[in-house]
Length: 410
Ligand SMILES: [Zn+2]
Image 1 (cartoon, rainbow, N blue to C red):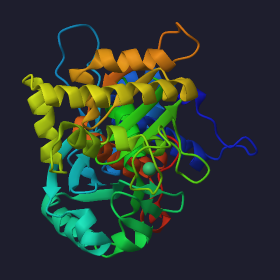
Image 2: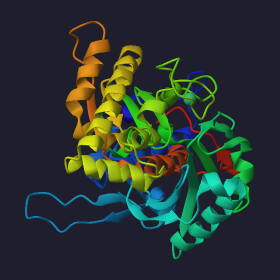
Image 3: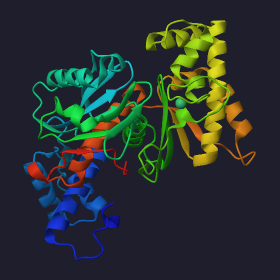
């Protein structure tokens, strides 16, 4: 990994550049790959033993890594020290602001989720200010006793641009909102805050910690009231010029169809969002518990629920076939409740995908359920917050960014 790292080509790297690059490379290995023998760090990075020793010492002094020496197993040679990211001592906060719920998690360096709780707020009803206050109160509770928070990542179910503006969240009912201003109502000034769209961060979570992280061409589909999507290609999020790429929920699939929350007619989410499942099953409720009830009834063989699931599955396959034609992914990950639809009626999904897939007969991408489930966006949000630390582990205080949008590199 280290051997392929590129330093600014127009100038000779300084000692400071090299130190920063080495710290970053080793900390990233520990964060993404888990505890490593110091000897293995030497092999993987291509750095010599004394440099690795010095880098690990500095990461330990910074409080970012810990080192333990295992007892010899009796084989020849001295046992190598095992180096770990300091998961308990260095944490990020991940937050997800969905339409009718919000969650918060404390995730340690290295990816361990220490704690996650539902926040007592309905964002669409409460509005941005009250939601921000509720997140602030919840963060105090989940952080009790935690020493170092390096950043906060917030996944929002809406269209977040590159400047951290929520341009519109059709299902949230929020628009033209500066997320940094909203978060500043509760966020300590010295902790940087990062924002992203829930699907983009769900994709980042799956890429880093969920489904087959080594896959390089992923398309992730988030699914609740609204439907979102995000592509990761060769490790980079594909966000588009404004940051809005992947809004496949608003792909028009039926110009004579139903009115969508975005104002258009016949968007894909009017046929595969949770509300669509409820409508097709004849249920009057329009909430998460209602959708879970339909899925549960379908699993028990309820004919009307199964018909509703099959109808959603058909529209899902139709859209996935189009996405496959446009983005040519290796794998499509179904998040949210669509993972349940996939489990209940994969044949219908695959039949409809095949019907629209070109060239004919070409094998389609793997379609798999999310490995992280409801945690995908939370995990991705925390990963976004960790990213600035991984890029420059020794940066402190005033050098740290105060806020950031979802960045391209996943
Ligand atoms: Zn729409």
